[in-house]
Image 1 (cartoon, rainbow, N blue to C red):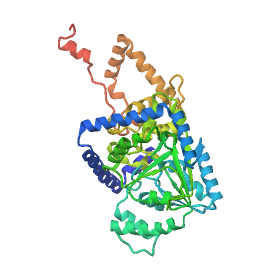
Image 2 (image 1 turned 45 degrees about the vertical axis):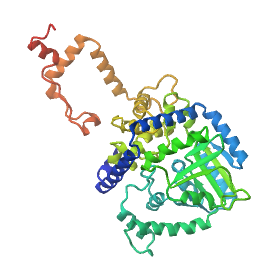
Image 3 (image 1 turned 90 degrees about the vertical axis):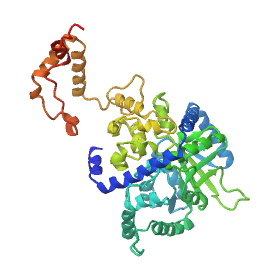
Image 4 (image 1 turned 180 degrees about the vertical axis):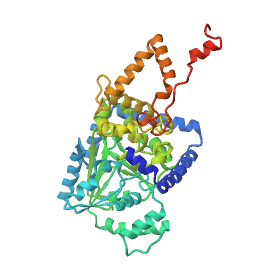
Amino acid sequence: MRAHAAAALGNERVRTNIRRALDGLVVKRRAAFPDGDELAHLQEQGRAIRAHALSQLPELLEELERNCIANGIQVHWAETCDDANGIILDILRRKDARMLIKGKSMVSEELGVNAYLEGHEIEVVETDLGELIVQLAGERPFHIIAPAIHKDRRNIAELFKARFPDIPYSEDAEELTAVARCLLRERFRGAIAGLTGVNFAVAETGTLALVENEGNGRMCTTAPDVHIAVTGIEKVVARLDQLPPLLTLLTRSATGQPITTYVNMISSPRREDELDGPNEMHLILLDNGRSRIFADPELSATLHCIRCGACMNHCPVYTRLGGHAYGTVYPGPIGSILEPQIQGLDAVGELVDASSLCGACAEVCPVGIPIPGLLNRLRAEGVRAEPGSKVRGRGSRRRSKHALIWWLWVWFHADPDRYGLMSGLLARLRFLLPRRFSSWTRTRVFPRPAPKNLHRLAQEEGFADE
């Protein structure tokens, strides 16, 4: 991550773009919640709904499966990303589909489904404008709700000109959007299969709720003959009447809107008396480490996340580095606690240190995820696994040198005489101490011990007996 961070800090144009965009989202969110008491009530309500769902997760998932099947939706369980990709490929091959149109879905990014399907000679077309832009650029999403937030109009105009040389060059946002719309309309007309994510899955009714602003998600779910919905198992909620507060929190926290342009409630494939909709519908429920997270009473709060992105918009680290610096699908504060649990501390353990622990993320989280506390827990897991812990890669960040240093620190501080001896030696030898000490001094000046410690100063001032 250090190399990615250095590259991000050196790109002034991208830093300017993201700061301008994220500052705007922060202002809009603040305006969307003018009443602090109302916000606190909504946050508590959202937290309670998500906590209730997780407390009954196995039962709710079984209820969701029963009701979806009763509605005509085919349900598939995927333990790993490979399992989910295999299921998607089998569905497409059975329908002889050579192209897949996609609505915005972070879970599909988690699967790496684009590269997987393209490796099996199936074209994948992103239909969300931001996702299309990063797909054309060969990048991964920069932000979970605004994938191309790091690009300005000139970036996009140059990209479109390079990929579509017959299209007149323009930096006008409306013209660029119109170009994308024209390109995608032809794709919608010829698509056999569409894939989307799921914002919430309602166990009570077997309903999939999807929110969007562009209408492409609705096209992906209604125009093709087959609709494939992919979601993590944690997205389930118990009842339909729990959706309004969650949707209010999601849209206001994400973009400052009172509600998104499109709220899609999908409960079945097309019925005989309906004019549109897919003839076949599939729901893929992905685990990919979520069961392991769910099993930990403290870390299970990670699964409360509703993917609003508010923690990123307010994070002093993310707003200076941006999403690509993290090197993972989910960046920012939520990514720093989710990715190490999914991939393992041994693989991406650096992420748990990518935080100032200022608490801004926890303050704005609409469902009350205690991100700083979970970061500290994962930092501890990295060097010393808790009893009964199932965190992947636990203990992998422990270094014998560091353990010895801390053992010596404890040993010296546990006895007043030893502490006095050590502080005295450090004071006398302070000029011999190195100016550079590990990676800590790359961005800090190494503090030298004072020539006189507090006890000696007190003695000189006559306070020794007080």
